[in-house]
Image 1 (tube, rainbow, N blue to C red):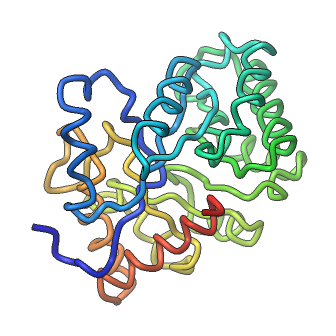
Image 2: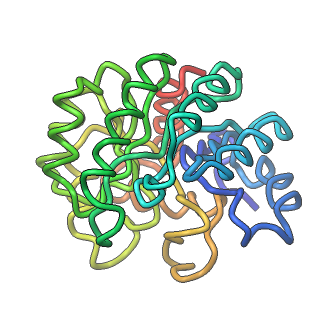
Length: 261
């Protein structure tokens, strides 16, 4: 049974379109509210994921969609895809452009291709008036440079699954971005993530699963879902020295501001 009946969780970044949810997606989503999860944003990572995110948002009243192309999929992106996203961004259930950005963990696509479509999706966000969800892995300097040069802070948004230093997190907060915190904060060796949570204001943190990935302790290595955010909230509460209910209420308020709901 959900422990904090007066505080509902907002999962700001999920991937329920993933095939690992095919067998029980409806049962899982239908039980969210009784498990303390009041709002979910399903985030596109490639074009089919964007279409599926829209479908889920239209099917469930508490699910919203973000449309964008992950840097690992950037080589497949076309201007026709951008046009489709721009057209569908007008849907009232679409609340952000993302996730997009840079991922240098793997050699492909090239950095030049990733940067091209990173900038293009910032332009798309500005044209649609929506906030952005930024994916950045092993690309701290280039991500900061592009976001600054393109004045992406005008859009607002989230640095998703934040993995860099607390000093850089403070720079992003000063630019107006929120910092996305998920299951990693519960890992014993996640020193940078824990320090970031300690050093930035609770008012600039949002909860996210990135499900089905990054399940928190005590479910690390298992399929993740939004009900596990209770463990993330409790870990943040311990680091901040506040009650878990306060973390849930604050991060949910932050998410509503971020997505303008």
